[in-house]
Amino acid sequence: MSVAQPRYDRRQLSPGIVHIGVGNFHRAHMAVYLDDLFALGGDRDWAILGAGVRPADTAMRDALKAQDCLSTVIELDPEGKSARRVGAMIDFLEVDPGNGPLIAAMSRPEIRIVSLTVTEGGYFIDPATGRFDSRAAEIVADSGNPDRPATAFGAIIAALRIRRDAGAAPFTVLSCDNLPGNGDAARAATVGLARLSDPDLAGWIETHGAFPNGMVDRIAPATGPRERAMAATFGLADDPVPVTCEPYRQWVLEDRFAAGRPALEKAGVTFTRHVHEFEAMKIRMLNGGHAIIAYPGALRGIAYGHEAMADRSIAAFLDKVETDEILPIVPPAPGQDLTAYKTLILQRFANPEIADTLKRLCHDGSNRQPKFIIPSIRDNLARGVVPKGLILASALWCRYCYGIDERGQEIEPNDPDWEVLTAAAREARADPARWTGMRTIYGDLGDDPAFAAAFAEALDALWRDGVDATLLHYIGRS
Image 1 (cartoon, rainbow, N blue to C red):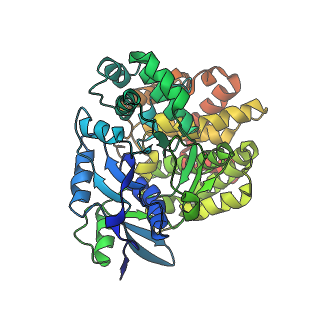
Image 2 (image 1 turned 45 degrees about the horizontal axis):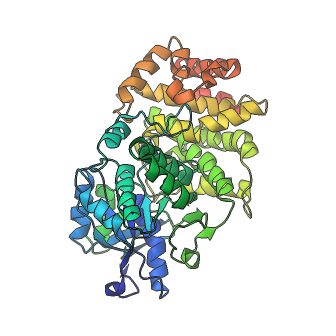
Image 3 (image 1 turned 30 degrees about the horizontal axis):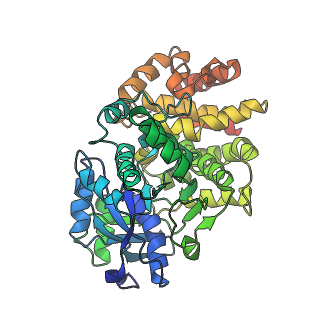
């Protein structure tokens, strides 16, 4: 099978973007949009310099540098796979504990955008308040050592300080992560951390910087032996880091940039003032939907998302929660039909070619539940509705964190706070308030009598009747 190559001369590219966090999603999403844009013949001064702030990023750098920073992207359409080599990245900066090479690159005037995919946890948001957590250990460490920061935001601040002192304009900080108000979260982390060590710099960033909000969407599973074997069928057996992804992709952005931007609208990006509506639609329905199928599936020993969707109880559970409890509290985005979007999500989740693991979808619930599930519970309670399906989804997460599935098999640690969560889940079996009382997750929601009662009822049913019977009871089947 043939592999599409970049349809432009990569020697004509020059960097305009530094991207921190070169994982599968970035290479299947932002890099693909830029690849398409370059193929149209313009904006070739917006190529990407890859970067990382974790020691683990060194392996990705070594792999990509060995193949001239080309990424293999395989689209998994059920009607037939296709592969392309994406050439939008032209170099990958050295990964250094003090982030010296990264800071130097971001200080260069031709770098006008610094983009990030550093996961939800990389923004240091306090789940209980939804605000930047200035007391996080990594933030405290960076504030005391601003010249050799360990975090992405510490490095961004160090580079912005150099640019300010040189009389240069700031770059735009462009979050490409899945979290509500991702641009606002990036601004809060940047300004909040800067304020701890240099209040004047924090003020300059607030006045002159830009942090556009955006919604990003594409399912790109982790790479393993299956994905490498797939690349081999395209004659790319020597690529250790191919990316597989679904055919669907979407990117919605605010048009708010400090130093210009590429004409991404030519490549299919939507620029709009209504990003938050698109964002709420996607985060509540798609990311929330992933959580809704992931935990019951994992507890029943199911390995993949499409296999969970083939289970009638789980698929019906998702459909009913989406229809009855999520659609009514999601503001419609311009030009979007929420019912049609729900149908599209069900189809995407059921795509057997994706083979997205439930382990990946279950990962980091302590960061994801407060963003994807709990806000929808709160919004339903505010309209006088007790959302028993969403509350059951949260109880399923608790049951999962107990650490033993319904077959008696141990569940591997799957959260940065796994030990804390497991201890709470085991105490919650007898006292559900031990779980809902975790202020760092639920805030004051655990004080709501209707929520607490529904959660206790759901968790008790999971332990007494099992996952399948509990789901069937919710969807109204015996």
